[in-house]
Structure formats: C-alpha cells, structure tokens
Amino acid sequence: MQFIKIYLKYLALTQIFVLLFTILYAQNEKELFFKDHVYEKNIRSVLFFPAQGLTGNPLLPAVLPINQDNPLILKFDEVNTEEADRYMVKILHCNANWTSSGLKDLEFLNEYNEFSIDEFDFSMATKVHYTHFTYIVPKVKLSGNYLLLVYRNYNEKDIIITRRFMVYANSLNIKSQVGMSASVSERLVNQQIEFTIDYSNMFISNPLLDIKVVIRQNHRWDNAIYNLRPTMVREDINQLVYRNFDLKNNFRAGNEFRFFDMRSLRYSGQNIEKIIRHENGFDVFLYIDKSRRTQPYTIIDDLNGGYFIQNKETADVHLESDYGRVNFFLEMPEKMTEPVYLAGKLTDWSYSDENKMRYLENSGLYTCNLLLKEGLYDYCYQVPNNQNDTNILEGNHIETRNEYEIIVYYKDPSINSDMILGYKRMY
Image 1: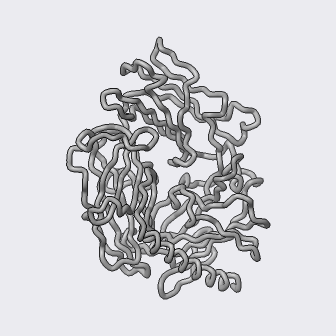
Image 2: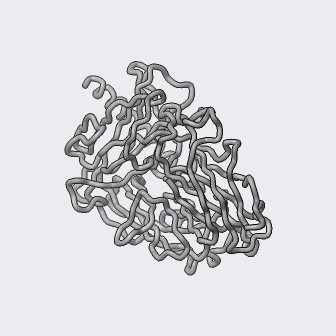
Image 3: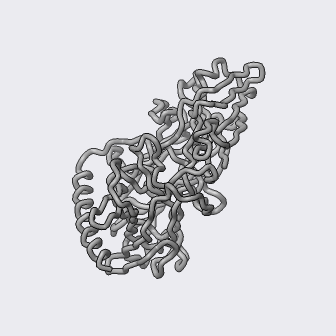
C-alpha cells in the first residue's frame, strides 16, 4: 500500500508534465504522418473497422473489397470536453509505400473531398466526461492504400487523427501457408510465409517490376515485410512463386498476448489487482508482470494484440463506459540498455513518450500508465531498438497463433499509381 501511495504522487507529477507538453505541442503546427496516429492527448479510444450487419467488429482490420457495400466505421472520443468540436474528414490515396499517389480527388471519389463528422453524443453518468464521435467512410472508386485524415474546423493543418485503410480488387489468386522457418536455428522461434500469386486473369507485361508484395502480422505496420522478391516466375502459367530460404519471408513468432479485463470499474477483473475510485476518475493497477523470455509456451485465447470497448453494467457501451488510468508494471532486476515500450493496438503499435516504460530504481520496476476506456485489452512489451529480437521480453514460440495478411500491389500504368489486386488473410 505504501508503494501505491508513493507511486500516485509520482503519477500526479508525471500527468502535470504531460499536460504542459500537450499545451506546448498544440501551439506548434502539426506534421502529417502517413500512418495510424493520434495528434492530441485528449483524443482516445480510436476504433476503425468494417461494418458487419448493424454494427461491426472492431477486431477486424480496416480492409474492404472494392465491391462491398458495407462501409468502414470510425469511432473516437474527445475526453474532458463540455462542447463538441467541429471535425472534418479528407481521404488521401497512397502508393504501396504509403506516400501520396498524387491522384486527383475525382479519380478515386464520387464527391467533393471534404466531409463533416455530424454524428456525436455526450457521455452519460461517467466521471470522465467525453464526446463520442462516429463517422461512416464514403465508398471509393479505386483499389489501393488510403489515408483517412481528421482535422478541426476546416483547417487541414489542425490534424486530430490519421488512419490507414485498404481497398482491394479480387483480380489475383493467392495460395499461401504459414509454417516453420527454413533455417534450422530459427525453426522454433520464427514463422515462415510461403505463397504463390496467380495472375492468369489479367495481362501483366513485367510482373517482376509491376507487382509488389507486403506481408503484415496481426495488423501491424511496424514490422511488416516489404519488397519481397519472388523466387520463381512461371510465365507459362502466369504465376509468381515466393518460397524464400533467406529468412526474408520470416516473422518472429512472438507469444500469445498479455491481457486484462476492465469491462467493469466496480470490481477487479482478470489480471487487475486494484481499482482506486476518486472524485475525478479511477486508478487501475494491474498485477506486476515479469519477463516471459525463458518461460514455456502457454495457450491463451487472445485478441492478437487488439481490444474492444465493453461494459458489463450498462446498455450503451460507447456512451456509458468510463475511463480509468491504467498502470502497468514490469519487474526487472536491472534497467535494460534499450528503451522498453508498452505495445499493441492500444498504442497503435507506435513507440512514443506516452507508452515508454520508465524505470523506478528503488523498486526494480518498469512502469507507465494510459487513460483507457472500459473494455478487454491485449498488450505486450517491446524493445524496438534491439536489433536481434524486439520480442526479447515476451519470447518466441512457433506454436503462437498469429494472423497474417498478404497484400499484392500492381503499378497501373494508366494512372501511374499502385492498386491492390490481391489480398489474403490467414492464421
């Protein structure tokens, strides 16, 4: 209990520093990032997913076939607000490397490229007040990479959120499998992706130059594989074969994700040690984690690093779910030479000061905290600067159940831009 009191004082000073940093940052012009990014600290719980039926599944990636009528849905909260800000949306078409394609708006849209977010509601009976926004993304005419840009009051430089999404055409056939690494030394810790691309339904004069492939693991872009070259071109049957033996088609298998159940703030859910209720909100303390580097593999039904908002006591999860300041702890006898980060969809798989773990010398603990909405969350600890293995604190096991996506781009000479002509999800 004494440790929690000392930590709460430390936490209060940290929050003051974050607030001052946020004020100074807001005064500067914001740089546009062509990635999933939140540009202000009061924007929380950003979910971007395809609609299914009346709602949707927030655990699915923001990927749609070009002929699908179900749209993408964007949801987010602006916390500690009494009035709703005016937010606008713009869509940017991008190349395979997530740079602007330079296409004109009317080449990929049927309407003027500035949309208003008109659907919003205020939270009800919550300690942390917020405005919840919902936006339905309009349909596009071309396949490819897109960046959704959310900004304030018609000012495109006052950026709030950017989100990547993909629209694909089913012009190519992809056959794939996930297996052990071709390297004997990596066989128990790496997963290898092998596949073939059948382009017999279309004419491609130079598939080696015109086709690009990207593979990603668990919807992540930070460790995606780019520029993978085929090992064989079978021109007689119009196939590209990718059976690399140089580990370029290998991913570290990682481990099943850690998780905590915060679907209620009235009692402690799984992996939550304590919830302290106070006048302005809740402080949530997770059980202390330890490195899993040398631990054996254990089957856990995880969300592959994702999260979803849910509240066990209320009917409207998006408006009646409250926020808690969640405190993470990782026990380490000594401070590591490289920085340690809390990671997962809850941090957009980014590595910033907000989710950088701070080492408390006297307690032998790494710690950080995030303001999170009630729900079920996956997370892990990453060491992105470790050149050998960013999963050094989690371990790697060939048995780990990961989701993989293969994205096939084609450089269309008529528009000089990259289209997505093939897409495959696999487990």
